[in-house]
Image (cartoon, rainbow, N blue to C red; front, side):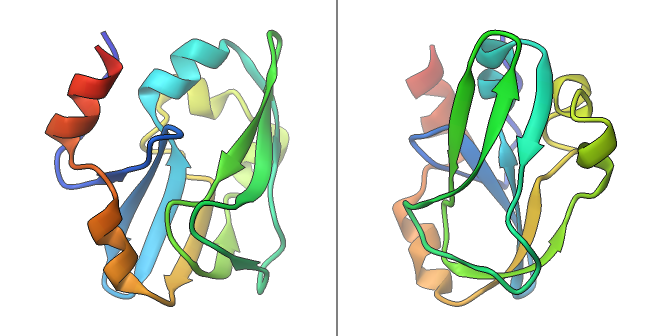
Length: 125
């Protein structure tokens, strides 16, 4: 069974956002990494790129498939997880520890459109 963490926000497309102050850490959920299988590459935006809620910002490629990444929130990329460039399989080891991008939120009210852990867990069953 896939792990779901309380206190995060979840998108229908299986991304999560962990909010810390005015920043959001965006990654894929444990459910998504299980579905993808062994991750071999993560395509990430550049620092200072803008991401828009519901629009794609990159992709995750596994031995089975490639999957677009959709931002759960709008913001400006302030950091990318450079560890994933050399070691993309970190996402398989712990999808929640190994976020993909950190953004400065431009519209925090968008979080209200996302699911909480309990709702997301029910959707994945």
